[in-house]
Amino acid sequence: WAQLLCEHGQAHLFENWAPGDGDEERKCRFFQQVRQLNESYPGGLVAYISNARELLRAAAQGENPLHGVIQVNVPLGVNLDYGSQEYDRYEAIGFQQLPYLSFVLVAGGLGERLGFNGIKLALPIELASMKTFLETYCDSITALQRRSGIPELKIPLAIMTSDDTHARTEALLEKNHWFSLSRDQVFLMKQEKVPALNSNEAHLCTDKLDPYTLLTKPHGHGDVHRLLHTTGIAQRWFHEGRRWVVFFQDTNGLVFRSMLAVLGVSHELNLDLNSMCIPREAKQEVGALTKLVFRDGREITANTEYNQLGPLLKSLGFKHGDVADATGKSPFPGNINQLVFNLKTYTETLARTGGVMGEFVNPKYKDDARVEFKKPTRLECMMQDFAKTMHEGTKVGFTTSASWIGYSPAKNSIAEGLKKIRAGVAPMCPASAEHDIYNATAEIFRRHGCQIEMPRPCDFQGVLVQLGPRISISPNFAVSRAELERVIPSPEQVRISSRSALVIQGEGTVIIESLDLDGALVVTVAKGGTLRIRNLRVRNRSWDYHALSKAEMSTEEEIYTIRGYKLARHETATIAVQEEGCFATRRMDVRSGKVSDLFRVDWSTVESGGYYLAAGMVLAAAGIAGYLLTKKRSL
Image 1: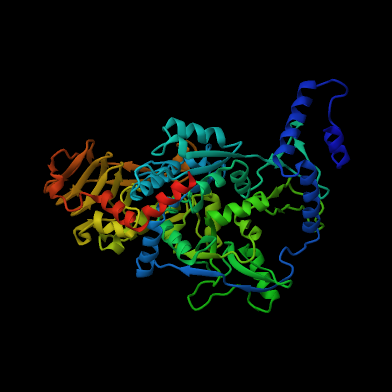
Image 2: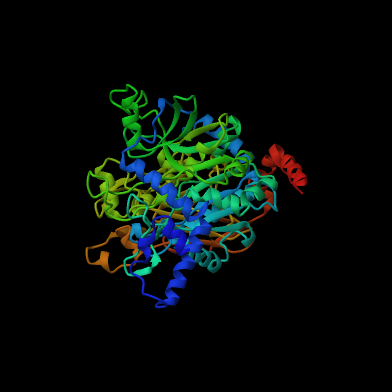
């Protein structure tokens, strides 16, 4: 290994080593690390160093990565408006595809960027329920399984972890008994790091405190494709009869809200790759989905970084670069790295490419000479670049839905969020993400016909959020707009004030017939149980937010300091159904404490008692026969 490294310009690594047999154990550990890095990178360290030199040369010379592009077009796509007939139609089509789904969660990062010393998946998605991101995602998949009408269906979930997150992700799953999923449907894939580089000559570097340890950095989320290939997971899913694989990020709690409609677009348009997108402001600092036409005739639909799009358009004769169209938005939709692949095309491409993505390097130079780095860099790859590896002729498109229904990640600290605000974009920090989740649910209820008071602006540590009713509903409550008709049959009889909190949790069924809520109400219904909320009026002090003082920002738990506030629970009314059967509330006024005066309703008298069964029957008529036939063939 020492000879190989020296032959490829890395002799400097040994300059500070002890002579002779000194530090023998640490030297052995060094070469073990070298061996591991060599095995984990396609082509080994020689290929990594060679690729790095070429990419660093191009970066130092300022080469344009989009050289040869002669035209930039808007790709094939559909713009969805939540609540429209078109949206409902696509959602119904997506509903029929439930038996054929699989999911991939990209979760290799820690929460350090947020100010959280743990994995981001362990963060509470919001403070009303205190459910973690990972639990919410698992519960969402379980809810989709139940709607399939196939009792034995298990929708698989693969999670890409890293050295930093693998053990803690596994521990979180095991501690919580894999949440609502079973252990055999969750697959963990660990991503390896790559060596850091500290010069244009692609010199590897060691840790400042230990000359026997190579400094390594993450290679980027593009490695997820290679892992799905080398583990055989993608191929296994395809042979099991699955048709779609959905990729999503670790802290976007809204991802499942519009996912079925996006899936419906994929099916109807027969897309091999469908990028979930959001409307994008002109010149906004968000990557754009574009169709690039090259001088040699190639056409590629892929993400173009915002800092490349403007100059590219200007070079092609568009004087002002990226400008708004008649809608007031950029014609190029914003890429949010949530992807839906046709699994057949995906596995065929993996077999041809090995899942290896094109790489890039982004060194931070000390000056315009572009020779010295401010800090070590590394080669990176992005999962959305899979589109660039697909054969010409494959159908690549997009589906946009408004940010409020599909995208509000918690990925920035408060300080970084404030910088985003000053740049004119959303802060994308835990506070904004939490309230966007509440407000999305409130808007869904509002558009269904419920009387939900509008939010008001509120400032926490400089981050402005829209403070409305804290509505936190289990994914099991309703997975589609059509299901709202069944669980809220008389929306005009549902009123929730802006200072209220409503938490619906558990694996049972909740049907809200009539509710007047001006306070806090927590409803828990266990699996097999059904609760009909009727003629219920709640009045109590509710819950409110306590902004943290400067002193508290340094002493409170991290789940609060990353938000800048705590949630104070003053008074709460609770309803719990812990047994099978259908129950209903009596006409009553409630302040706080447990509501125990429920009465049992005979199933034969409950119009919507066959809630899940009915949903399953609809789906069965549309697709179960095909699923079973596919399953039989795969066996």
